[in-house]
Length: 389
Image (cartoon, rainbow, N blue to C red; front, side):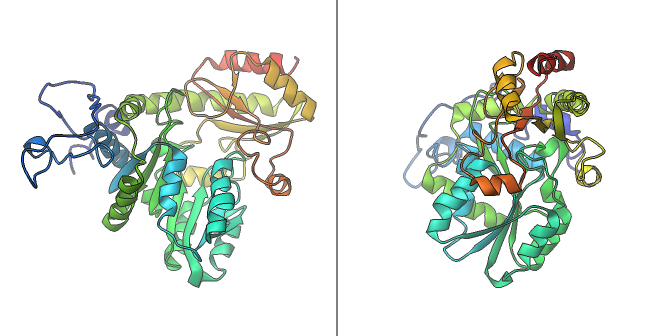
């Protein structure tokens, strides 16, 4: 057992795996805000054999962050990108026209937009399943053209839970890559690579950064060949994360476990309160025992996260809530210290055709709540007055 393997997750968040870069003993990772690095001579790498040439390819601050995320996800490698969507786009460079990709039916709207409006015209074929069984059925259709399976779990925004182990087994049998978006639970609560996934995706802007102050994305990868292919894409397309944003992510990850514990505690309290409110018609939170994914979550994750979707009695009430909230802010994004409320039908999922939105439950009465680390009592009081109590 290595020194890091003997450390608890919380300790590994605080202490990245690589030590002192420059001999100064700095506790905080330095920001190497440089575009290029000097060479000692012809045919040699950067100064003193550092291996750094140009920040588009690699930078010491980004490398520190990537080693940290790989360690937390138990991956062979991790690559930091300028956004979550940049990470998804780089991932899609693994495929060519004619390839088929099976997806969970409830995806972040930006991912769906990329698949539907950019990559489908390019020649990739996407099919969707609203449940584990439906995804497994799609995998079985025309397996000779299947190249990947791509899921979110829990999903955005409906909080559906997919069985990672079962899908991993089916994808492996079909010779397809298995990709899991782990943004909502992070490696603190769920590590898909240990359950059979090949690649884990993150919007690092969310819980990993944790402060609503930067944009980032990650791919955590199992296997050297995949790592080399995706690093080539990142270098060639220039989509690597900047040194300063890398520093912000390293800083944010230090408190990941603390933030998620508090946010999850708050989320359960809010979900229970919302479930008892007469104007709330449904609550989607995997931490509630009546959620159909509750038992599965307990088997494949160590926590339920802090995202809630809930529906209210009529669409007019949505407008009232969004106008009245004060502690909770009406804004897109999620996963920060501040609680945010979003209207998926007009914001995050507006590009999904109406009939498809309705089929997965995204109606004009649905709200998505990213629960932060404030006082649960203050958050409930804010929702109470917003609902007109």
